[in-house]
Length: 144
Image (cartoon, rainbow, N blue to C red; front, top):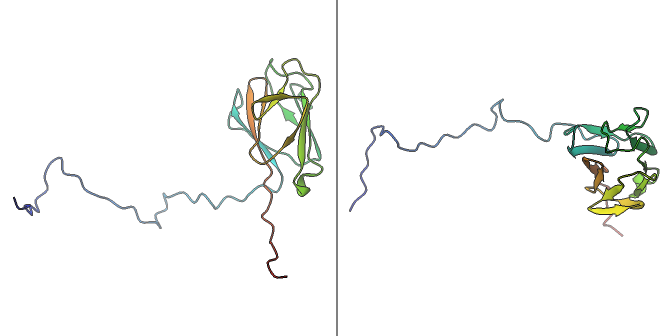
């Protein structure tokens, strides 16, 4: 059987539509500037979607509004944990539990103190957060 070449518009026929790449409705996902400091983004919990730019060497996390990262929920201690970012430019960062009632979890394990890497998850109470170093790629000298 030979295929028929019917140029009339059939109901139910599938048509392909291609959106021009220069169309203004296409989002430019790379246009947003990267933060200059490490960030902590809430991916689960009451403040989901909120991102904190961590612009100090020591960051405090807890239910007290005076903390660097204010986590407003009863499952969080007033002074729950602290992050040490003083060596973040050298690739080292830590989080330490401050004797909280519910503990601090890093990458699924309860910790008293733990090293953080880019993409580490931190769970404090009902909040699950993702840590990003936002480190700029370093140029590697290949000539020697």
